[in-house]
Amino acid sequence: MKNAFQSGLIIGILSGLWLFIMRWAGYTTFNDQVSPIEYISILIPIFGLYFGVRSYRDKELKGNMGFLEALVQSFKILIVGGVIAVFVGIVYINYIAAESNFRDFSGRIFGALLIGLLSSLAVSLLLMTKPEKVD
Image (cartoon, rainbow, N blue to C red; front, side, top):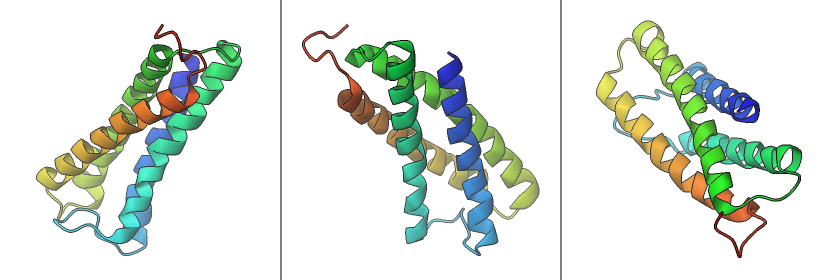
């Protein structure tokens, strides 16, 4: 669980910082249109999951990991990162970007959830080392 907490913390903090970076750069992050630079934020959970699950496989499982083990670890990482990112996002909406509404934010969080789920499936398939055994 320590690895999941560390990786999730990194994903959550980077995702939260991304909100402030976009605001500082002059992009409004909460409206009905998405600027192309916002798509870079997709890389945060992808790389965070990849390095987190790879670290879990190499350090704690000694290089042997099945698909379900990787998927469970990915979900743990995403839960920790998602809780932190949502908390930072709510603080951001309430105190920094008061002109934003919660509907736009919830749509982006739902999109992040889908990206996280697809990323966890991809990372689990890439990093499993026991392909003949489900778990």
